[in-house]
Image 1 (cartoon, rainbow, N blue to C red):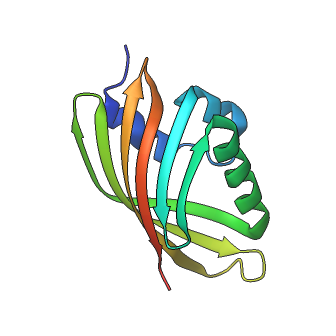
Image 2 (image 1 turned 45 degrees about the vertical axis):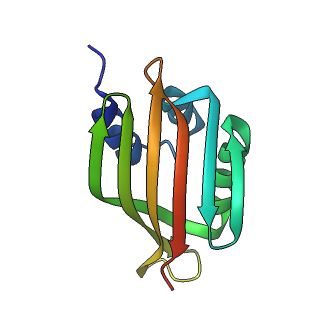
Length: 123
């Protein structure tokens, strides 16, 4: 039984996809495109460059946690509002918010294939 788009996105944020490349590959389409407006500008990532971003972030943080506050869906599109929390290597006992995000994901062939995202730092 396949998951609905909403349940798939929810499972993605609750998974180890941001730590484990095999899990990442289970959720994300090989033709992935992420269009990201952030405080540092506009970036476009594909399947490989997004994984490279995740890998480089993992070097700076002891852990990352995604706290989803809103998730809405219509057919194969899902909007998610979440806060990204981290524990730094320098201070692993304190979890702090590092950013606020709104993402709109589009599903294709049962995988997350496209994301339009905006974010700003929590500071």
